[in-house]
Length: 317
Image 1 (cartoon, rainbow, N blue to C red):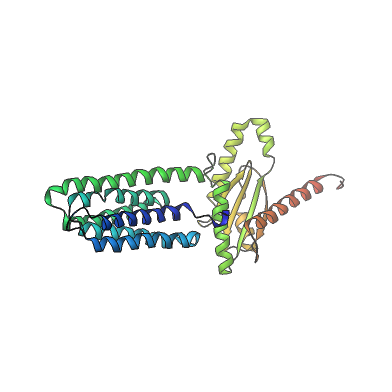
Image 2 (cartoon, helix red, strand yellow; image 1 turned 180 degrees about the horizontal axis):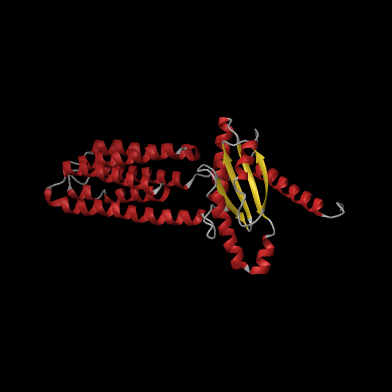
């Protein structure tokens, strides 16, 4: 399968969740465990689950984030319906692993807040359904099942949130690292091109940073990078995205900002602990993030060469 046709993990696992649920319902319809088992309902839910899995896979990487949330909500509601129509306590409590699967899926692919909401919806609606069918003696096992699903979701969501933060953050400066900056800047560029709004990218490079490392040591260089990052970050707008691209090079994405606006904003960054050079590029139709960075980088080094040339007494080469 070509890389651009590959099914994202969030889509594949959502399809698996639907498909596995559909197959379990199909088994319940074909081989009912109780004389009063709702065979017809199981058959309908089997069709919904298997059909949903196929639909999600067909949609593939075109499945929007909102569509993914909606599909997960539908799973939660179907579990609640099944719980309400179950005829044995074992059948209801056996839905516990499904609740845990919903919670873990949300914890892995959603923010902490959204994962909590999905887990609360799944457990809440299933508990309402269970209350309609469970005998009083089975209330405690259900409570244990529901609380376990909530706790596992919370634990996994917190761990995953910490891992995402670590993976996206430069450990020295606390700024976005190269990978996460490119991902977010790429999304901002796509929005700007769709809406015909301006967007400017800047590449910033510290002047004579190597001399600081050579003279004062790498510890001093690290502290200088932290000071520069703090100084710049405090003067940027909330929507601006500053990242460390590597070494003493930084990148800046300025949404809703044309070339003139970018120059005004960059002037705010002056007055820090070290001098710096910058090159900018404003998005044009057909631009990619790579072409923007290439133009900004070319402007940066053209400016550096010009300063080196004009700084020589003879003005020559």
